[in-house]
Amino acid sequence: MKLLEGKTSIVTGAARGIGAAVALKLAQHGSNIAFTYISDSSADKAATLENELNSLGIKAKAYQSNAGDFAACESFVNQVQQDFGAIDVCVNNAGISKDNLLLRMTPEQWNDVIGINLDSVFNMTKQVIRPMMKAKKGSIINMSSIIGIRGNAGQASYAASKAGVIGFTKSVALELGSRNIRCNAIAPGFIETDMTNYLKEGEAAAEFLKKIPLGRFGSGEEVADVTLFLASEMSSYVTGQVISTCGGLNI
Image (tube, rainbow, N blue to C red; front, side):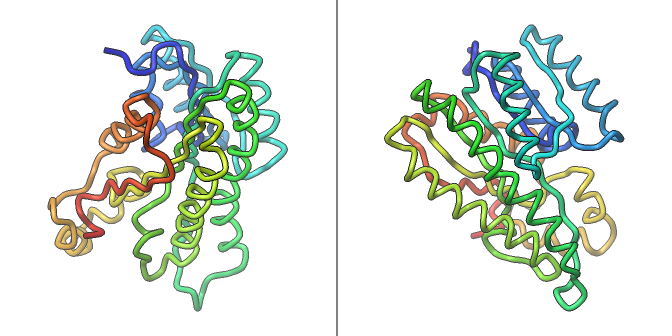
């Protein structure tokens, strides 16, 4: 059974990692996919993913766009509406980390992380709610992090950005619930991606695993499964929630 047959979903930052897994999962369930990547170095991966998604019998298109830039988001969403005709689901996944102790953190590092991780969620949500309100339906899914809930030394900027995503999510859910637009967040824990490869080496990995009740890192597909639930009608009475996908790390 395909849960998103005929729907159109946006996934930001989908050239690799969690974003790519989410795009693939939603496509496997019938959704057309418009996804973004930001850098020229990701163009080949984006093209490969676009071809893989189209091979599933849905329509998919990659767009080079910076979710941290308001004007770029406006242009991107307008183009998606022209290319696809509708926007049913928006997954705000684009994110970066520039870890550093607060004592050593520069304003530039802080602003870069806030700009991509938090400003991007505002930028994209601001644009997609217009077509969603017109259609009187929609699901917005924001990628937060378990670090946004519990904090982590050396990640003050990342934690602040992801905690901000949670507050934003709850506020949007309250504003748009009457329009049948749902807004939820996912808080992944330590997921096996390029961004977390360094955590799997040596003693650091053993220390992290001790803190996770399930005793392992998660996969992008496991985050994608939760995203599918929130994108589909299976979660039709769920809004303003944060679903931790962290192996029990926040217990």
